[in-house]
Image (cartoon, rainbow, N blue to C red; front, side, top):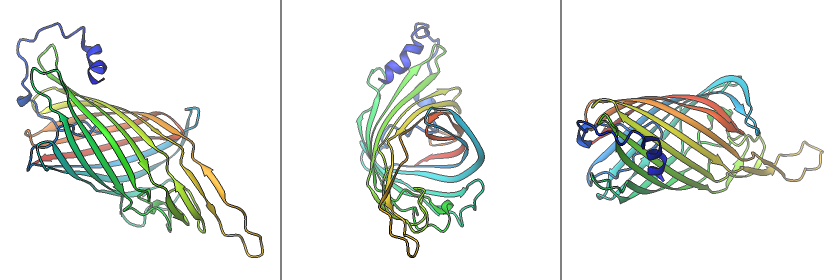
Length: 322
């Protein structure tokens, strides 16, 4: 699938032979903004890649895909990949998150908060080798733990998690292509499917419930497909681009609000968020000081969608391998 995705656009150029081809050892990479690293780490080596970002929402797409503008709000956050090579084929680690929300027309977070924590384990199925037409592939299992606050909130902006246990299974793939000028184009295709548990919800929450509410939320399944490419402009400089599609099934919330004194209690109410989808692009520039240390500056733009937020997210990342 990855080769069909990229080779078709390069077929007309691939017949031109390069005078000198860049070797993979001479190409340094940080990685694109969104597609995670595919190759498992060698045994005993560690990777730390830390992102800081600002999700700037300036509207929503309705169920027909029409953009409806709104006052801009900011969700500041950080995400860090902390991975370790257990064996040459098995990589394990965690992804801690932190955040601070500044919604439009409402108080910001009372303080920076801890988000949900993801545990991750990956197994390398195949490894790329020069002269071989098999791309590198890895199967990854993630379990996200509800460590972030999500209900019983004094203000809505203090919610940093989903409250649910989320299990995700992903297949990552990566391949290399030599351009007519001898430079390398590195391509990735990542497919992820995630399922979440139901969660008890009380009072004000990230699910839009109000004070006094008691019930449960049932988050919908999620599917993500991310195709990314990196072009080795020079040994130090790399241009990168992600194209990502995401679909979320409807989230259902059911429960009750307390009845006013003297009024008979109403029955259980239910609400549905409806399914949502989005298409985003994330251009980025990488600078690598060495094969082990690099930085990335990029921006993710959600400019197409249905029943989802429209956003622009600038991000800065530092990647280090030990």
